[in-house]
Length: 308
Figure 1: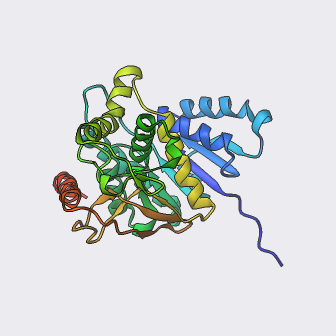
Figure 2: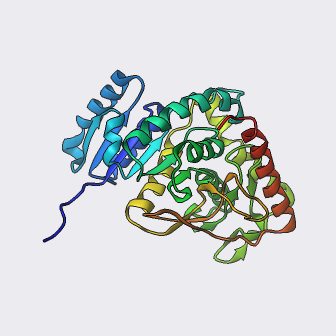
């Protein structure tokens, strides 16, 4: 006798710009059978759920509602976007003090009902909050994932493609390290069809600075980022639910990775139904390795100030 069908359930905690755009993206692409919105402001979650449900005749296939933490019980993936948002002139690290106390409350409420889901963290500073989530939850390291530098790598590929007038999907390039000011481009491995990109140092610096500062530019212009991060989270979700084994630069707990341990940083990971199945070794140049280690040291210094 076949086992009973269990619908895939994704929970999005936080119905701000990132949470609602992510939920809407997942809905449009029908990534799961059940989608739950949770927010400390339950009326806001109700309104967002109602608005999306009114479009169901055009989409179909998804049961969507505003729920409570008890709805985390049957979730396969729980995406956390809740917390204070980054303001103009504010760094991601500046958000840490505001968001760590919020996270302690959120993660404890999740784990009261669910100890088997994959926790996907998007709130900034994402690397430190993913590390805090691991410590607070007690989950297996594979099942706590930060959005990492998936978005940064997409921005990097877009800007390279713009300079080269080549579709960014054909660009092989990645950003690793912190999702923030100490991130670094892996120029030594960047290419198109195995061919070196041929940029001079000034061009490389311009592309990287535009990549690193993209969020600040968007926040200054419209108050928050939302669309591209939602697409990045959608990409991670589908790799998990479809057991793809896609290689994505998510943030994960590192263990002697290019000389870095006991910190979450963005690095190429094989992502499947188990979470982070494997972290792939990158043959970094000496300069890149030094910058990567510096990024890790920066975040470890911030983590050491927290009570976890």
